[in-house]
Length: 204
Image (cartoon, rainbow, N blue to C red; front, side, top):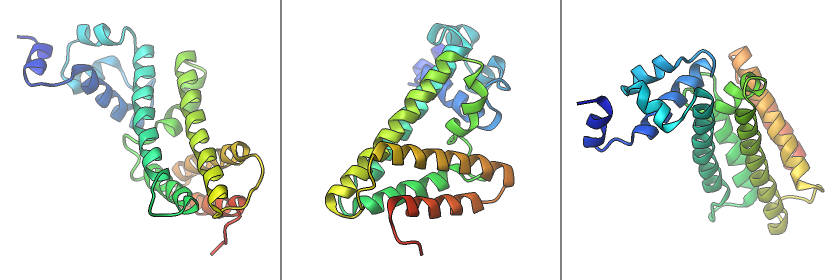
């Protein structure tokens, strides 16, 4: 009896299992350093199953990123759509959560944009486009939250909300890279200070 048959009998979703293993490994090692055999061994599935579901490692990388963004965007929506707090506070909570997700000691399985962005941009056009689409969706959600905060009166109107959101995303993306390089959270502290200034919030 093959591994895939055993997995099915146990009620295991084989492609989801492979994606989960790949996502975890790539968040630590990157895309190129993770070999197919390592993924298959960790997931305990045969090579034929991999190619049945994904076709190639490149296609697998796209699937991993799509899975990552699906989960991440759902988490963002949950943070930014809370009813019991103001929209300005929701935005700050989002960036606090960003810091928690991207902390250099807690990054396993969580930081694929930071981990893979620069690496795959020149290696895989499909993966680059998937990363680009996912980051645009993140920025759109930040911009929408800024607009909603302006409407409820908890933020001042600073003009084009998408431009502000894009700037904030870039600041935090850069801070995430610096945190990994420095092994220190100070870049996040600077990012939060700049965030409050861009949003017109008091700086404590």
